[in-house]
Amino acid sequence: MKHTIHTLNKAFDHRVRLGVMAVLLGQSDPVSFNELKETLDLTDGNLASHVAALEKAGYVQVSKQFVGKKPNTTYTPSSEGKQAFQEHLNALEKLLRG
Image (cartoon, rainbow, N blue to C red):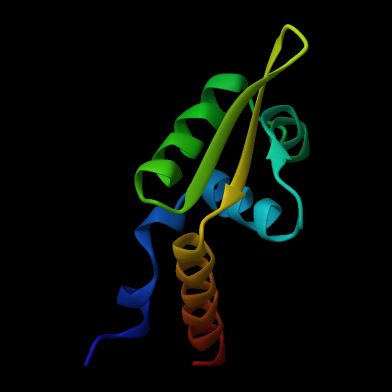
């Protein structure tokens, strides 16, 4: 039987990825790059690299479009991302309960 610590999802090990998922799951609408950046107090590059890791894992969906002449990138959690994050939170709660 696996110890609870081994059921934590490595994709959420970093505080930025944990924060991105928490913000996305706390919103009913897609969240823009700038909103995520401001909410989590991150640089462009730091946010971009962590969102790319979540996208590669299949946990975040990215939508790119233009609003007028400006690019606008928004993010939403995928159904797989929602499930994986909930399982991660459940494992954390289990660890806290001992």
